[in-house]
Image (cartoon, rainbow, N blue to C red; front, side, top):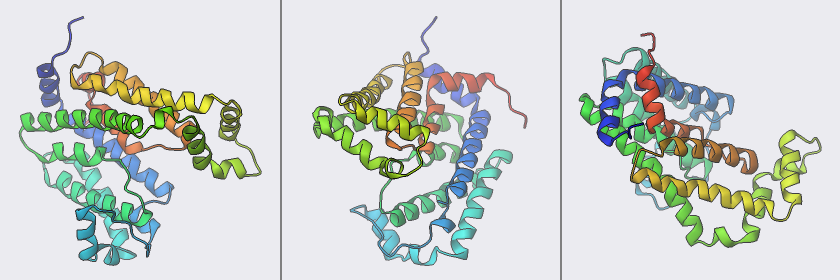
Length: 280
């Protein structure tokens, strides 16, 4: 089978923009519903007196502008409503680029406020990076921005592995065990056992298993270096991230739904969306 070139990849993206936009915002809408069900919409998380801007200048600008102070109560509810509405309109009224722009601005505000109030800067940039592609008119720019998102995805995964290796986590036998216990402390101390509790306890009972799974997850991240040089192995990157996502959720209770959207930039799903027709 002939290898797909980068020019084939970008040309396919240009030709299937409407389908990609439909799938992307449908998945985003599902993510917004999950936020409500998990009580992490802006209105639901409420105020927090201990905001965490870290050293990020953009976060400090939000604090200096007192944005977290007035984005609470009814104002937070209105932002959640208009965020969801702009997402839906980005699906059903794709002729106007106003809706993706409004969505991207509102989502960025939500993203920063959420990270400030939860005391952690989460690494879930898929919606922000990929969303920029839908605010441009020219197909070639759309394809270029989604291609950039693909490389951001590969860099994010590969650099995370390198950072763990540089810090010595790969060779620290007790590191994975400590994370496994810390992330699952609630279910390990609960009186009623769940199926995840049984799995976690079995892994902890075997001395070498926590480190084995930790090394395996790092190797799955390292594989993404291939994405910088060729599209040939994208199907393996797709499988690798699905395994990484399942492993992170099952063992360490770490799962970032938003970053699953990056999979839409890998060539197997780009090909699939190009062949699939959606009712408009």
